[in-house]
Amino acid sequence: MGSSVPAISFCFLFSILLFIVTCSASYYVCDADDDGTAHLHFYMHDDYTSARPTAMRVITTPSMKSESSSPRRFGDIVVLNNVLTEDPSPNSKAIGRAQGFAVRVAEGGIVSDLSLHLAFEDGPLKGSSLAVHGRIAMERQVRESVVVGGTGHFRFAKGYLLSKNYDYNLKDGGIVEMDVYVSHQH
Image 1: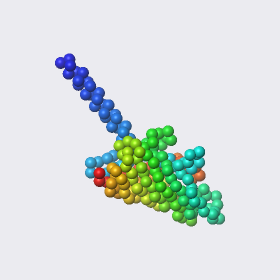
Image 2: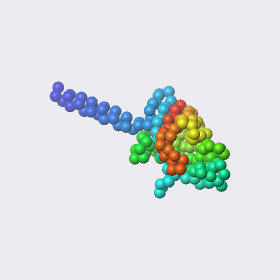
Image 3: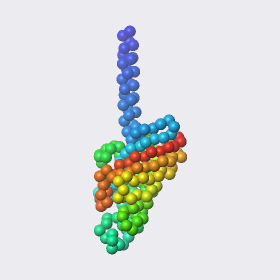
Image 4: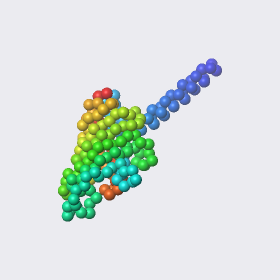
């Protein structure tokens, strides 16, 4: 009788530890079903101004009279290598990168054609990626892009991404909150 109590206690403690590790490893997977659907939630840090920026305007066009005060102009091309984190804090755990480019496509307003790969570098989706494409109109509170494919866990992925500014300005960049709803085969 005395030897079974420590064994039960060990099993109980091991189960709790396994639960905690599993929960902390799936921090950005809000909901994943066995049918191949998932909801992911994370934050993208878009940094134009630090000593090591993660977003850089590589082509800039001559200023048009109506846009002379805008930090982003029609024809500009921006390359992105933004950090993805589990929380909005810049010190939050990094889970991957948003890598791609945006082309400013509207003469009036800030509208971009965005091509982005969400590359997961940590956690349960490490080594997987999602390919996202969309028209991003910055004046919209919530912007929608399409998930056009993926790799690893997200082979044959399709779905959509909703993004909204968490703390953002066009001059410096900032933090964008992202929710991805995706179906896939794995």
